[in-house]
Each structure stands twice: as structure tokens, then as C-alpha cells.
Length: 65
Image 1 (cartoon, helix red, strand yellow):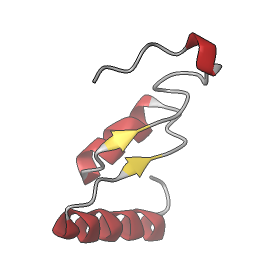
Image 2 (tube, rainbow, N blue to C red):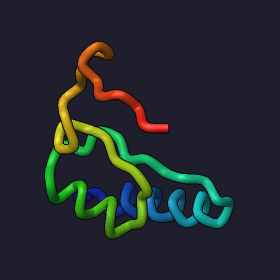
Image 3 (cartoon, rainbow, N blue to C red):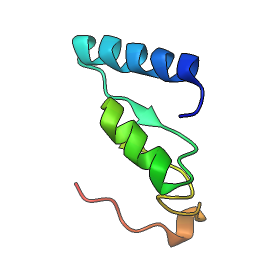
């Protein structure tokens, strides 16, 4: 993250949610360096163009139970 205030806020949110047992997800992850940063901060999940492009529901793989 290039904005130090935004990074501090994200770190605080992740710390708060971990204390409560809540999982976090980073949205709009579009580059490898952003993915690495959210992993370093401790975000649980990511979504965005770096992970994969959006697909119509018909093309999504089946969900495992």
C-alpha cells in the first residue's frame, strides 16, 4: 500500500476482526505486490483480477461440500 494511513487502518481492522474470530477479505487485488501486502498484514482471503477475472455463474466450477 502506498498510503500509510490506509495501511494503518487495514492493519487495525484485521487485528480487530482476528480478536473477534471474524475472517477478512481484501477486494480489488489486482497485482502481485498488493496480494503480498495483504498476506503480510494477515488478511484471510483475497479477490480481484490478480486472483482471477469475473466469470458468469454458468462458467464457475462446482462448489465442494
